[in-house]
Image 1 (cartoon, rainbow, N blue to C red):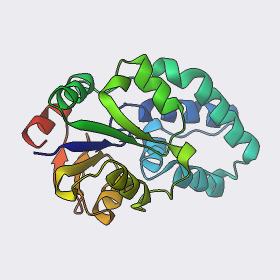
Image 2: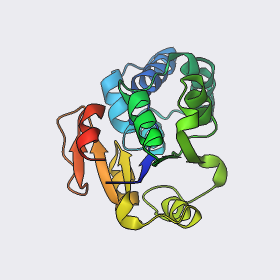
Image 3: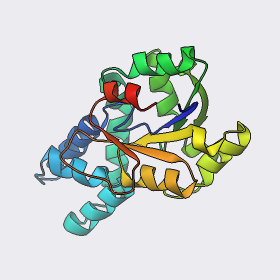
Image 4: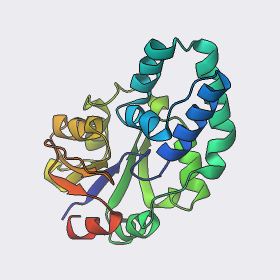
Length: 204
C-alpha cells in the first residue's frame, strides 16, 4: 500500500488540456492560422515550452502572441477547467485512510486556486508549484524535497502523471510511477498504467 501519493496537475488531476488547446487555437486563428485542438494538445502534453517552441518555428509566433495566449488563458481557464471524474472521491479516500496527497506541478498558483474552487485543497498535505523554483521535471529535485520534508519512505510513495516527464521525475527520485492516459499509448518507464481514476483503487 502506498502512503504518499504525488499528483501532477494538468491532464492528471484536472482535465485542462482541452481548455488550453482551445484557447491556443483561438489565438492562432486571430493570426489567420488554423490548427486542430488535438494537434495542439499533442505538443502541450510533451510540455508547454515544447508547444510554444514548435509553433514559434512553424509559424514564427512572437512574444506578443504568447502574452496574448497567457492573458486569455488566465481570464477564462479557471471557470472552464474541471477535475477528472472520480478525482475528488479518490483524494478524499487517500486522506481519510490516514495517507497523504501531494501536488507537484509546473503551474503557478492557479493550481492551488482550482483545488480550492473544487473542494480538493484540504485533501492535500503539501504543494509544489513553479513558485518554489525547483528544477523542472524530469529532475527529481522537487520530489526529493518532498521525500526529505515529510520523511517519506521511497517504497511507500508513488507519482501519478500523464506525461513521460512525470514518470521520469518519479523514477529519478527512486519512487514508483503510474502513467495516466486516455489515449492508445504506452509508457515503458512506468510501473503502472491507468485509463481512468477508478483503476487506482487496486494500485494505491
